Each structure stands twice: as structure tokens, then as C-alpha cells.
Image (cartoon, rainbow, N blue to C red; front, side, top):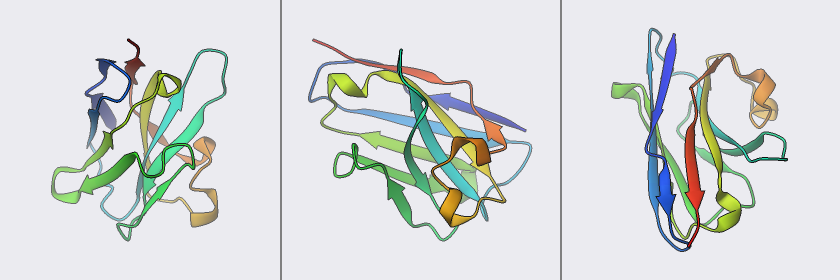
Length: 124
């Protein structure tokens, strides 16, 4: 199983980026696909996830600015990031699992599969 994330880059504050992550080797249409991020000096942080029902969940810090979605036909999860702030700077990782329970969705340790990470830098 392989997850490949794309779309990171350098953007000015207030700008937008769209990340995508495609899974191969296994389908996650009935599982959970999520995004986490890791900034220097910080612990890994939950960003957003799409539950198997399709319902999205967000960290409070990104609610209203980020939108997570999925295309089950392409086994892909997206993260549209708008109104980016310098504090959004981090390496963003996608994760997936077919056995997450709702109460553990925000816990990175519960995910079995991870992408390689893509750098997002918000700076003027």
C-alpha cells in the first residue's frame, strides 16, 4: 500500500493551496482518509479527515479555512487550504485506515498507512 501526496509549496499569507493524496494497493472507500501536519518544534497535529460516510471533520485551527474531500473512484483525498497563515507552515501528511473508530479519528497512531509528506510554507 502506498500513499502519495502532492501539492505543497510556498504561498503568501492569505493565499491558497490544494493538496491531494492518492492511495494505491488498497481501497479506502469504506475507511477514513485524513491529513495531519508536523511543524518544527511541535507535535504531529490532526488537521482534517473524511469519515467513511463522507462527513468531514476539522481541527478548530483550520475550520472555516480548509476543506477536505475525497474521490472514492480515484482513492484520493484532497485538502483545499484557503486564507493560509504563517502558522499553517508544516509538512502535511496524508493517512488512511479501514479500521478507525470515530472516537480515535484524530489520533495519528490509529492510522495504518501514511504518505511521504509535502511541505507547505506560508511566508511573505
